[in-house]
Image (cartoon, rainbow, N blue to C red; front, side, top):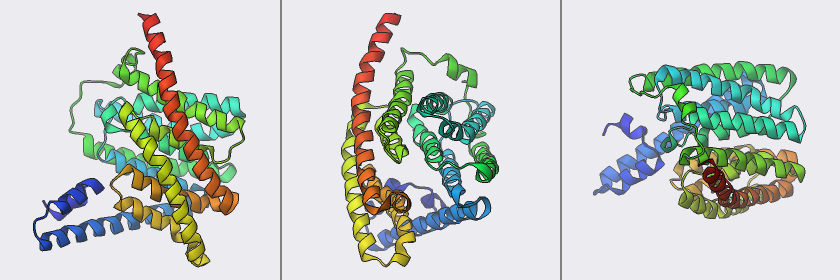
Length: 349
């Protein structure tokens, strides 16, 4: 395996390669490459996010995160349809990501719920037909981040430009990496195969209403940072039932541990270092191969931003509460809504 090939491995792959080494020299070499990859990735990500922030305004730094998520995910993942059709679907999805969150934030809770439902449903149908690719974890996360970090006025005009650049970059990467793949399925076939009797369709519908109803309830209760609840529910409502239970058991404790570590860092480190706590979390995520560990370190970046909005006690409380609510709601909704879909399926037959 070349150094370049080794740099393409994910955390689990790199750690498995290191564990497989039989001598100390090889283990040190692969460990060094792994650490270099993390540093390189972090430097690149920081450069992109800072670049978007400098060019398009601080409120649009989140667009840099979204572009990174899409480019890095769709280097490897595809949509299971012909490449020209996939390019069209990807363009539509970027349009949804660009306009959907703004429209959802522009009205009351009813409008927000309806817009979120339609947009997330379209993202699930267009981009998540190939369940194995786990594209929902990228697309829905991007949508919820843009929803949670909404902007208006001149900043939104800048966001339109930034999202256009991000769409172009993602399309170029997608075409370059997937143009030689051959699929018979077209974009139209995706809609034809949307069927309530299909396990895939039932999961897609469950995901849509699980996330949107969780956020609606949070809105009715005036809970701040509702996107955290949506992200927590989304991470639990995976296609496979057993995985959902495992994730719920890992996410809540992971967030609690992450909050306590964040508190320790907040009180032990000098104020001049606070801005870098999110970076520490990013490095931790890079070193993590399990979902539970990633949940711990993902907390750092979220809290470092929320502290400026909610204060330290409020940020920590709602980070724990929102994730607990979203995770538990996701598990319960998946069970209850599954029964509703069973009845609908039986009645349809």
